[in-house]
Image (cartoon, rainbow, N blue to C red; front, side):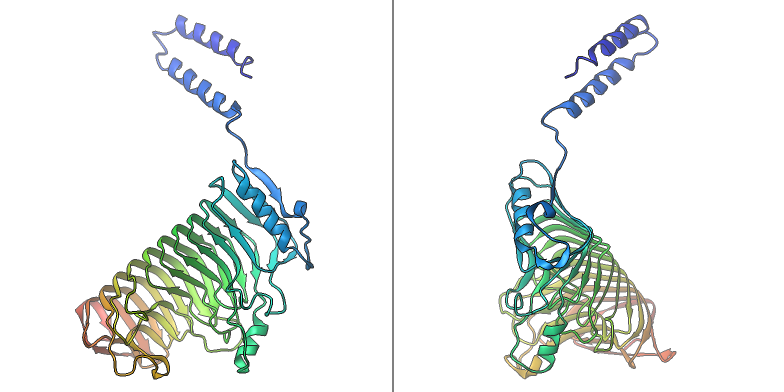
Length: 420
């Protein structure tokens, strides 16, 4: 395979021998070059296997059910002993629930989407399935590009009418997986959550756009729970519920350059960056080492919020940093609420056992849509500790806003307005 290279190598070495006192670095360079060419020519180094969903019968017409074709393409990629790329070309592909199940024989699978994946228009088809597209027990999977259309409006209408409806499906979930990347994805109108990261390690979400109606219930943009080493970057989220929600067991989470704004149309505009609800269970993993920086909130009900159930629990939230946030007409820019008890059921008269400590709010500016811009309502038996406010300036109708503080201790530095 390398016979063409040997004469060149011999000639070069002879040249080196005649001039070795002038070019002592030439031989190591030639040896390195030989090694690189050998590796590139080796049968053990192979390009990624390209698998088109079209070759398995998928149709880009938005009507033909392509569920089996996508499942078959995944099975081929997962069984491959070399890196694999699943290609989804332009067009619309109608899909029911697809489970991308691992573990696989290789740890480098790229799902490259240039088209749109469309959920069934009949919400009942996947509405009780919990997930529409789910990756389980996989390692080294990258999901790049494309659009997910969850077609959730029918289910939202069912729920708003008070009828007996299924809970709805999350559009995309990664569960019990490692070394995952989600890049350049657009998610529209999910039945419930758009993206869920559950029990995963080392996940990067970047360049994601999430959109749903302002009155769409439980359509959280990105939900992270029981995971470590998750990074969310350069994304824009506008839904009917939380922008990013952070559940129990989350550690080492980094969120940067994320914009949270109203969903399309009219609605409640609940969007917030939200830790909780924590402490629903008496035995629960805590949340720690969370950094949220360079975020914007526009016209939302809440900004940065930590919420816990008002009931006994061994949970905690600690080492949290909210930094460089801009609020525009946000009803509740900064909130800690440890007395969450919806409907006064299962917790009336109880106090939260969740311990909140070492939470820093740094360089947070903008406007509040209500007079009360900062509210710390902490547990009577487990007061918040180590709360730090640094350079926080929030106004209400171009006037200083107000703050409320119960059972919280900490320090303030720099310009802090409001102060309470």
